[in-house]
Length: 141
Image: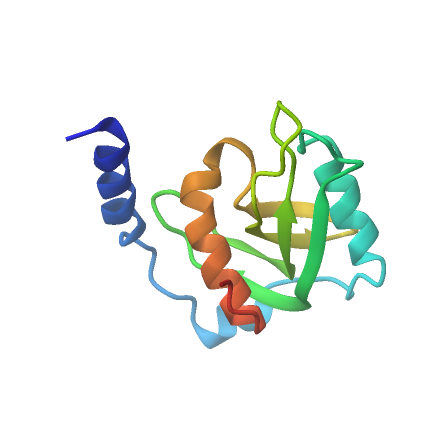
């Protein structure tokens, strides 16, 4: 079995190990803060240092911001905030576009507090980003 296949199987099995859902009282107590009116700028500023070609990356805002809570799992800490679903098409090191991939960014207190589908964890995080985008009302193709 290849390393990619083994990693995919391991990630899939670990993703199923999640913490129990919060009670209604615990959910009600989560502090999302005020809705960020400048969420597009917050997201673009966050992505600027994480993209290969930030000036040429295509960033499409698909859904949000909306309050969103994500349960804790073996691979992810519990996350909550004003979530935004974006589709990103960045260039690779050779200057070619790689194709769109989803990200869900959680904004609290005027900054990105957490992101799914970001950086080194993109392979595992894309699964969470697909689910988060769906909860926000956008089905990733």
